[in-house]
Length: 117
Image (cartoon, rainbow, N blue to C red; front, side, top):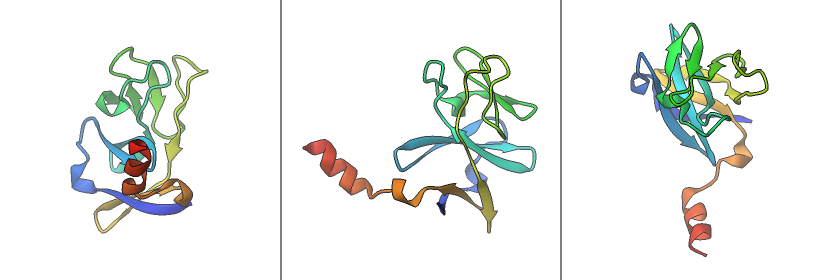
């Protein structure tokens, strides 16, 4: 695991989220009060972008079907069998860093070459 810069803190909206891509994952970054939180962007119910959901009391609500997910644990209180991955976030010099497996971060040009085969 290693920390990777993913966005400037100023890029994260005060309401809603920002979708970023790291490795093969789409990740939603949120500002929850004074804290920054990161979860997998895809709702496990039907694949909606959670970065487009709305925030309330430390939870994001899916924009399609309103399933809720804790920004801290990834758990849903509406459907306990559903969960999204959460990531450790650090803020350094107004930049957001995410703890993410180094081996999953790859060179985009290599991915594009594979896609062309």
